[in-house]
Image (cartoon, rainbow, N blue to C red; front, side, top):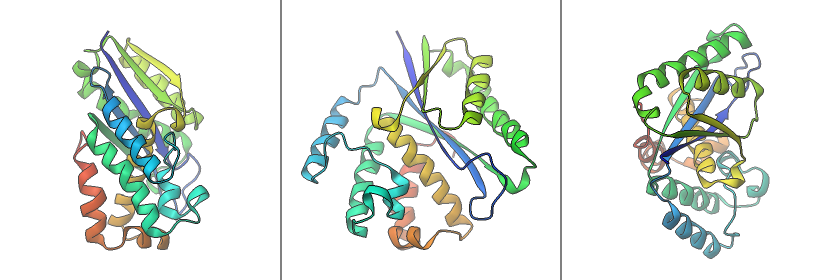
Length: 227
C-alpha cells in the first residue's frame, strides 16, 4: 500500500490581532512511507546520547531558541548545538513541506481567519491533486491542539480527498512531528526577520543576519514545495 504521511504544526492562535503576535501559520510536512528514514533516526539517537540526552529526547524549537522550559539553563552554544542536530536531521530525510501564513491585522475575526486559511489549503490541494490521489492512503497527524485548525484540516482534506485518514499524535511520538515544529518555527522567524521584529532572545540565539540565513533559513528553504 502506497502511503503518504502528513505532519501538522501551527504557530499563533485564532484570537484577535495583537502587535506582538501578528501572524497565524501552519505547516504540513510530507513523507512518503516508501522512503525509509530508519538510518537517519538511528544516527540522530546516537548523536543525542553522545550529547548526554536520552535517545528519545523530544526537540521543541521555540523553547530552544528562546531559552525556555527544559532549555532555560543551557548556554547559547549548547542550545544552538541542540537545534543544529534537528536541522541536520531534517535536511537528511526525504521530506518536503509547505506553510500557510495569514497576517491577522488584515482579517476581521475568527471566521475570516478560518475562511482565509481554508482557501489557502484548498488551493494547494487542488493544484497538487494528482499527487495526493496517487496514494492509497494519506494520513494526517495532528495533536488536535487547536479546534479551529482541526476543523479546517478535516473539512478541506475530506472534501477533496477520499483516501485521507486522521490520527491524533504528539511531537514526542514522531521525529517528523518535531521537524514540522522546527519548520513552522523557522517560517515565523523568517517573517519576523523580514519585518525587523525578532525578539532580543531570538537575535542572541541566531547571531548575525548572515548566520541566520546561512545556517537555518536557506538550508531549510530547500525543502519547501512552494518557494
